[in-house]
Image (tube, rainbow, N blue to C red; front, side, top):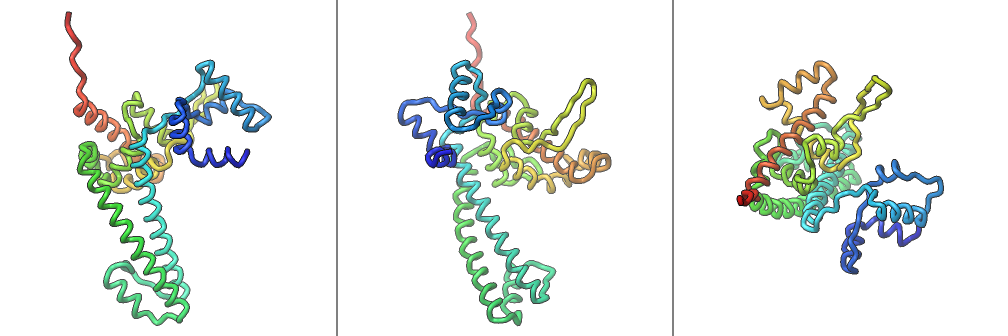
Length: 291
């Protein structure tokens, strides 16, 4: 692959806007479905471009949805916040590792005011003290940025009635609702909740031969951010009265991990119907004209 091709592939949003500026209508192909339709032994940019052109000319190109600019920007902000939180967690784990090297342990949090005082009073060697102090400064700096992003997202959530509709679900707070909205985009592009669950990679793989059908693990071939946020909400949702019976029934037969995934899919199904109802209220259909 050429250097320019690698650059374009790593920046699809930039390429989409560039094509539109030049008056072209961009199309985003679904890679797995394209591979199933036309798989060639010889692989290079020229061959791939020719195959895609033939499929598009024959109206056989399996296309993926291109999110509009506001949705892409909202995704970028929420994913940026998630990466900041992951970086903060990484640094916290590094502090735990330094403390473990010196046999220090604490049952409660190290990040509260009492926890910070306990860290300051630890008799650590000079080098370890410097490392812990530097990482605590980094955590504090990250927290300032995270709080700033949270304030911006809070204003966005207040202006969107769909957030309020989604937060009635157990385990779904403001940030979870915003992430679901940003990753799903236009919910009306999915004809059913099952299609949305499949797009999120929360449906099981199916292998069939003659009359034998085997169901495997979830496909994990959909949107990873949507799947991640639902798996984050599922441990709280599975303890709610709304889902606890369903969780215990599946956990008894298939185990707790599979039952938790089932709750994540259940949450997405409920979110789908709530979003469809909210969209219908915001944009009611006009009654058909009578003759």
